[in-house]
Image (cartoon, rainbow, N blue to C red; front, side, top):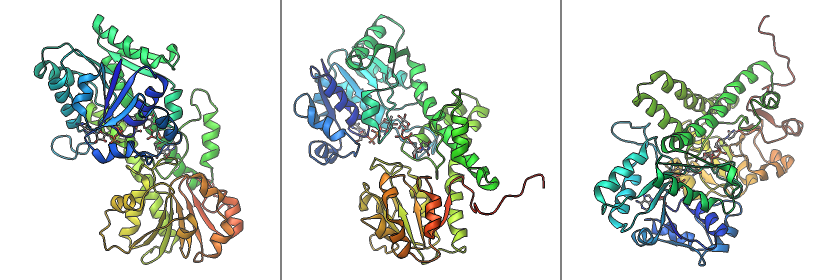
Length: 464
Ligand code: NAD
Ligand code: UGA
């Protein structure tokens, strides 16, 4: 059997590397139009930073895993074609800022229709709006060689930073197919690939539309939990409750569960916002404005949380950060990834730059060029310094803002950092990862998400 995957990104690369490593009898070709990205996949500096990825790629690359720009050849030679291209939020025309932009999916469907000279199994791996398989089927039927291709939905649930763990031991594999004999056979063929290492009971099969919709809904539910706990973080700060204690107290209820209840400066990443927006658009499209408005609040709360964080920084620093150096610890949207897409750090930094702060940014995995591009800085900019250590970013700063929960931030010598900061030295923990009591004893003024801003003073009761 031969498999190819169109799109060598954060999903296509790791997912196919896992299939190749687990199925040595299957040849896997990962293809992309972006030749730089392909060159990086073929080098020792992979384009994606992901713990454990290097090992798994080096196990299979050159044996049964190949990266190239030969899209048509790979389609031609494969039995199963995964489509793992980007499906960003549309930025123009009808549905701008909400609907998914499906032009890459459509382009790939057309290329497959023109290239395939025998029936193939086409697998939607990209996250797409419900009923996209119908679009792909229509393009294949009308532009191809009269062949009966099968379109399956097989959404990916990996999270960045834990992709290898998620891929090697997934909670479930979801496969949706057409409800007829050919559809069932195609689903079984794909299920057989995963069954090489995933227990059969974890492979769920559904109809096409349930599978497509489940992916959007899974992301919406996860994002909703973060917005819910973040909304409560504001109430905790006002009342003296502690959001981590509340999360623990509610999370031990097995009906609620403990995961995705970590309050933060806001969720980021390429998918949560995009997929919730897409869900709101679909609801509007299908005449369900109340459902759309319900999910819209998940995004609104996330935006508010980021603004609220920056406002607290501004207020603490005597309502002006103009000309003040601020240390930024972490720029990636979460730890253990170099991905900055929709990172909350981008919004917070932009708001501080609009207030004319001088930023000293350190992230262990994100490149200086990426940070500058994300902040839209001109080449001659002097408002941002990219530092090579957390200590350097804190040096002479009025405040340090923890925006990504990198483990190394816990290991910093805070006494030494405090000594080299401007006073009063502020620490804003946007991820609740540091020991706030110890920091206060060291001399820092500390603000953290959902924590009492002045723990020594007692709060007045609302009934007073
Ligand atoms: P990405 O931007 O990292 O990669 C997409 C790749 O597709 C790019 O390298 C691009 O050059 C390539 N591409 C676009 N059009 C092409 C074409 N016509 N022919 C060949 N290559 C083409 O995106 P990603 O993060 O890997 O996400 C891909 C899809 O998976 C999205 O729909 C996303 O929502 C979904 N997803 C992402 C994650 C994640 O953690 N990033 C997790 C689950 C699902
Ligand atoms: C998320 C989902 O977890 C994956 O299942 C899904 O496949 C993927 O989106 C996708 O479709 O792209 P990812 O965005 O990589 O994965 O990472 P998450 O761990 O979900 O974190 C997303 C954001 O939420 C990060 O900014 C993270 O810091 C934040 N977060 C997460 C919180 O603020 N609190 C939490 O409790 C959990």
